Length: 207
Image (cartoon, rainbow, N blue to C red; front, side, top):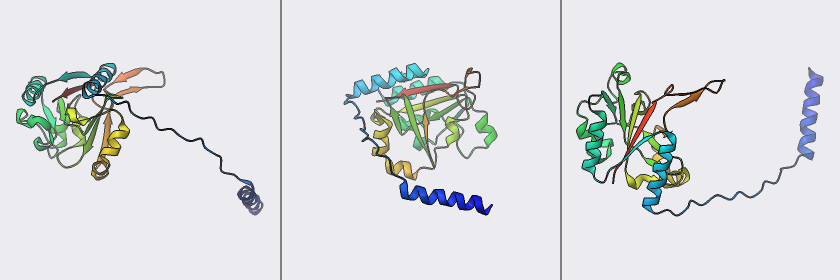
């Protein structure tokens, strides 16, 4: 054992004397294209469609509430707390389950309703910061996830969001990035949707 140890330490000392740090080429960080708000929204909607997400674009807060009300009608809802939802959406979810509700009730929900902290046009992703009144389970347990997006929260890249909201991300209990319905594939490459999370994602974009 001592001979092996001596040999290993000898190789390490030799490496320290002869080792070198490889030169890495300079990395060019791509600059996000300058898109106007309509182009940014168009790119986001196009990515949502490619992911199999059901998108809705509304022109007023009232229209957003009407759309949400129509989507959840007759379904059991698990949502973020009303003060955490944009466009006063909580007012049309009077019987919703919230974070403090028993886990059995949360697991029985048909639709999870959340806001979002950013919508990434490049990938069609929505970013959710969890915390008080913003339970992670609302976007994970129900088979349908309904996310409410404010148009002002659109960013082209994830990097832009990280730069703009670094402090908010650091203060959150978790940062989740949702990119379409939950997908998984086994060793035979058989794609299955909705195994580890919602199999249906709906996004309502407001003004």
